[in-house]
Image (cartoon, rainbow, N blue to C red; front, side):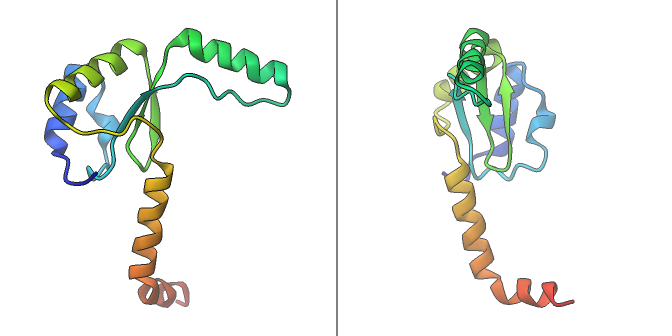
Length: 121
């Protein structure tokens, strides 16, 4: 997913009640929005299950921009999803960590010599 129109995405986010500051530093390469249905982790099964129940009850969404992910309340996440779909803006419906890390690896490979030189300074 590349070449998203940053201004359009931010405008739709603001219309959905999401602050534009969340997009500072975002280059418009990756965009994901998905419901956070759980995935609780804890030191015991009981703690993980409690976290899962709390997350499900909170009905949070995740806005993942590749370089960071933030939680959104249901009202903002749902509104943003509707606006993205109404405007034909593509977005992923799951975490972007793999996409982001592949991009970092590609950039690192492309600039390996420069990075090595900088590391030796």
